[in-house]
Image (cartoon, rainbow, N blue to C red; front, top):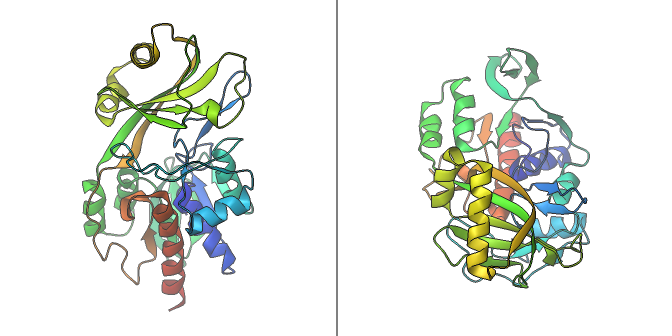
Length: 321
């Protein structure tokens, strides 16, 4: 599996559950992709990617999340999420959303800090290579869960697959820029997520609603900017400029007394897929390189998770046919 995000981990779990070996390669040092948590200097976990797990009741994702993390807390469903958002039925974790990713990854061999860039055809299947030309083993099949542009790069350095590469190149993503911060001087809204009331802020996430605030009188929140502002700020704005904009917007919404005690800026290049049509044959039945993830699934984390399971089932069927 290429990528240790939600769909890649789902695929690996499915392969292992059916009695096969699986290895996951992850280019970063973390797990879970956008299921990302950072800690403040006081040790408080702050969800710095997805604000919650979108796991509607009755879905397999909800079942596995509550099984692996019994302390997960369900918040009221959101009737009308902001644009490019799929958080409709929030499930949050006291120790941060990465807690769920770590539990999903338990028992899976994951090799971190390696960017797989080539797929060479060999008699056994495929040999995986990195940016330096090093080999990382031979595998009978490959599941690719990376964002569409990165998946396209990988397929271009593998067996000829022009139609799938062209599709992946056509998939657009909305970026996201976020500021996690400590807030004093005002009382922030008690709900978990509140829509921004300007053209700049998409929403504010009340991290203190998920867990105890580290200091008396201080609240923790994450300000997520709109895709439009994020698109411009992702490359052109400095962290200081982004923090200043967050403070300006928070003061406009919550009062001039708002002050920030600490800040962390996070930029996500591939935050969410812009809606697009997925070809019915995106993964041919005999494919031994199978795609999964948000580029080839319906919107919603339960569908992204299911795409990993489907990719595993399809690859195993192709390998045993």
